Structures are given as structure tokens and as C-alpha cells.
Length: 104
Image (cartoon, rainbow, N blue to C red; front, side):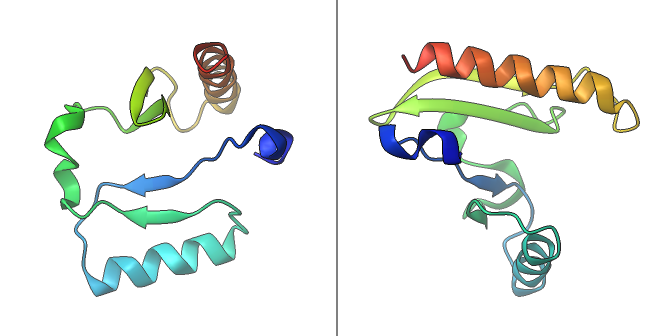
């Protein structure tokens, strides 16, 4: 994120969980504990997320790259098991590279 401050890129994390006081407290505590420097929030729509995004319920992480309110790229992290850190790192690197290209 810091690499792109000059070109006005930004990121944020939206969790698809029940939007209640308990979960909001957990998200804030998690962000603080892990020193997460980008905004984290819970979707107003809760665990389903915004209907217009057509998110797949079985995909644990979706990355949307958009510019001026238009989605330029949509990626799903599905292949890497939580215990396979190398595969997860490669998947994230591939998504970031593709998103960078989509937003050129």
C-alpha cells in the first residue's frame, strides 16, 4: 500500500460476517493485535455481502480491483490451504500483479 500513495491507490478489507457489536469489537481487536494498517470493516449486508457483487458463498476471500466505481478485475483466493503458506503467498502475489496490470 505504501508503494502506491503517490498514485492515489488505496485498499481496505470488508468482512462478510454478521454486522453486530460483538463482531465489530473482534475486528477492531484483530486489526490492533496484528498491526493492520489498512481499514477493516464489516459489510452492512452481513455475511452475504452486497448482492450486486455476486460473491460466491464458498470462496473464502475475494479481491476486487476497481477504478472510479467500476470493477476492473475480480479474483478469488481458493487454491491455497491455510497450512500451505508458500501457495498462499504465490496466489496473493499473482493477484496483486494482475490487479496492478488491470489498473494501469
